[in-house]
Length: 195
Image (cartoon, rainbow, N blue to C red; front, side):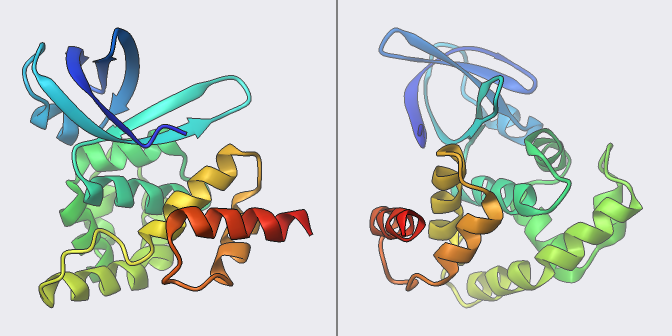
């Protein structure tokens, strides 16, 4: 699984970037917010990556910062929201603003994003409001954390890329202590799946 790319920006267009890493070009989908923050073509670039494996394709989604990456993971965890819609939401609302809108239950702000109807906006608020509120509280307390459960999101991503269902991965990871490292959490989850 690819988690980060550090290379030279070979090409960029709204919605995508081509990152040259040691002579290999990686096509990465990015939000319009991330696109606006990309450096000039030819300059060094670092993108946080979420690898999404489907039956017919391997897609890379890139983010300038951990908050946007965490929000992408949150959105994709909501039933009926795939990577394309999640990226579309992040194109319309910056990560920190999205987290605030979810914490406040601001359905109207979410509905301003093309492709997000009333039901989808309500589902996002219903499923993510508490999580966003916790993250907002942590930020106000001076500890900027992109997500209280970033480890679990990364572990869930790894397990789903290995073919496990998201619901099963969430259930298994929910029983693993929060202070366990990402690598050990994945190893423990795999041990539990093997039983």
